[in-house]
Length: 258
Image (cartoon, rainbow, N blue to C red; front, side, top):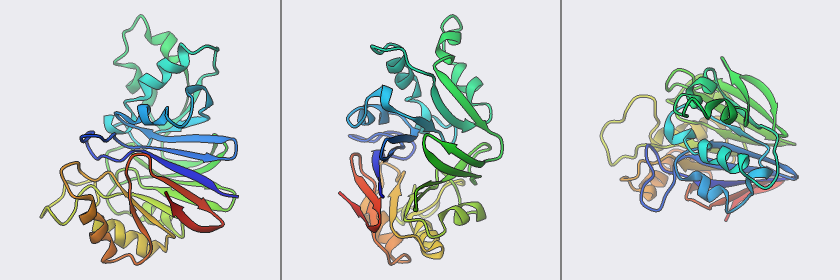
């Protein structure tokens, strides 16, 4: 048994030219999960799956570059040819109020009925959209989470946005695929708090013993090839740079990217 991971958006902070912000499609047999849906990611998502065939959306945290395209997704589901059940949403505590606040108050009640929100106060273990998900707090803003996502015997860890922390290392331990933010490269002398450098991503991957490292969330003005080089100074396993449309197969064979 294997499952597929598709990069819908790879850009950190804002959508660079020809890019989208964070978004990832996970598919295993009939199960379909979207993890984060930042600006521009919805357009790429719809190239792979129809709005009515999404089993659930998990949001790592409530920065716009990780969730803002939820409005378009819910609009597409609300006005589709068939009436759909509310979209299962796994999100930080307060997500319902946060998402609803920018919707005009006359439309807000109907719009909010399009979601079935499962809010996380401090993480936990969830069976969600056909996947087993463990969420732990990330070292970013309050209400940020990293995820360990399991289908059968295959495991993907997604860092979300985070500094190095014990929870992230635990979630990444021996994961088949580690999708790790690498906002900054060695091109810049300092980094903003709450984020990782590509070298730090390589350090975590090496220490956790992951099978493959996928670098994502690189700042749009920085060099992705440099990110791979930085991580590769520490982590000796296969490394890919996340680009829109990249597909990674996580299965009972070496993890493969196309």
